[in-house]
Length: 142
Image 1 (tube, rainbow, N blue to C red):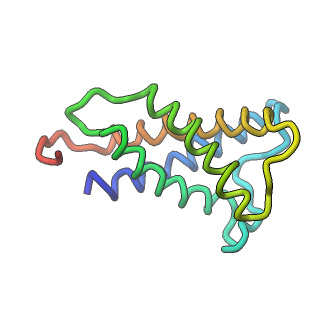
Image 2 (cartoon, one colour; image 1 turned 90 degrees about the vertical axis):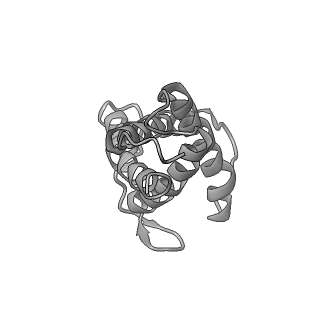
């Protein structure tokens, strides 16, 4: 359970409580136009964007937990989780997911990449927070 379900749930919750909250705070500070918790339909599924992002974030959290070897008896990779979220999720969004939706990387990408890095880095950190909070102390899950 700690290898799949726990990271999946942690990634889903981190998207709601960390990624979307970061976007909402940046919007409230009038630093970005995009507000968190967007209810615009996510093509092609038609789900609200924040929910589709949470589901995909849950899948990415499983990969992050496996790559960073997150477990209860190892030191928590805080910096690596922050960097994984910021770089991997932002790159996947900009260069894979968005082109599949017909949105191509053009023009000045720096503002978009900066917002993506900030919100996704907070997601990575938050996913690790939830994983560590929900883990049991058993050593038999190697």
